[in-house]
Image 1 (cartoon, rainbow, N blue to C red):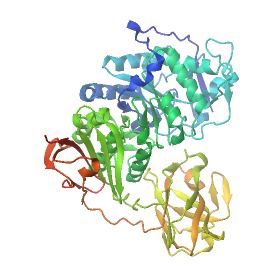
Image 2 (image 1 turned 90 degrees about the horizontal axis):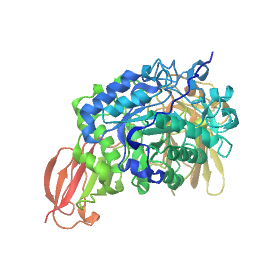
Image 3 (image 1 turned 180 degrees about the vertical axis):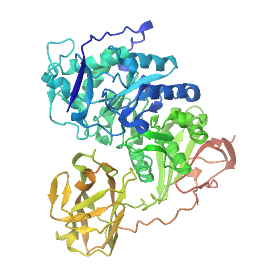
Length: 611
């Protein structure tokens, strides 16, 4: 049964002291002049965080991290559901929603005791502000269904929520809201009303979900207008990814940060994939408008969606890689673990002033080279003219090497539209073999049934050859027997309720190797999660990859990576300083500097001319 609690208490818009709301809307990019840094409750607590947990993380940040630039404390999703107690979403019809009389979500009084009597998040925001920090919240795009069903009025109008909604483009993974239709009378007024409420609470940061994938241009513009009319500096974060790169100009014009990928977790496959996405988005980094590689899944997780009472699965080398890549990419840094459980190593990652200087103030950040599994990034120090250089030993993802892949889907999950991706790729000339690869997408749970639907090799003369009619040369899966025209469990091939007669049913992790017919030109397929995976409560994330070369990892040893200074236009002698170790390494020229980088590790260096 579905429950609804409506607070029939007029919401008092609290006047802010000392004119703190008097800002110019046109200056919103100055509100995040450097990439935002803070803590977000999602990784650690999922949708179930409570007030004392938020306060304890704020206390820790104020004491240990504030002096290093960490400032945002963000309450993530579903703070308005009174009976949300676990890391997984309650079903819509088993959720107790808290709204005010104007159809605006209010914090759960059982989870946030200070929010009762119509106070909302004002008291909690005041507490965070008293620590010298900033307060943020998460919201879903759209208008609450409960406001629509109950025809709750839109503040300041004679309209109701039922006048502004559409069932089209409803979020596929959380059914709390309907779409707000731009252009309908009351649509802008509704968004104005919720952001006026947030401004009255003292909110400094809003993460808006289900906004960037697919890209909701009109609602983004409603939200931008709503923030601007409040007169308060509220940083806008758009989520989730992948934001279409063709929308970079629109995103830059309307938001302070936007996601480049889907939810990022602590597994190497996703971190390895992030190199590609960061390189793709690097040309669009600009001050006050930051492509966002997502949160830092570091430290300890308590009861998150994919993490219960455990520490990050990233090795120390992988944590250096994560922090170095996010630093060179200038991604916002939002820590995901429970800060009071941090150990000395984790805090050292977050409090390295030399590294944070790169993150905040470097310019011209870009990928420099990618050769096999070795990657380099560069950036400039605008104050000194020094160069920053980062090098990475990506060395595959532990299951397959990602070098020379023809196709990589990134993580697919129940959050993915259609639960899959269409594939249409050109095959390199004279290719002899084809490898179909399915990897775990990041949850670390072995229930990831996956299907290759209608896998077809197209020859130069137009002939189509179904892979289901070819015998593979070699195949293995994480468990079970790979199925031809059936799932790995032996049932029908079924993706999101649609059954298919032609395809291959498999499981992560798996590799299927075929010998390609002569004159093979293209490969097409639809790759998606089998219904067995999406019906499971224990996990369903995969990544599809395609290669024509053996993807087996070849090297997991430390590797010397030459840094050719001449290629950077640097001639003469240069002092090189290791920023993670706070140590000068000596003077070098040309390609003399060859740091040895651990498997899945990284190095970050300042290069200064010796005069």
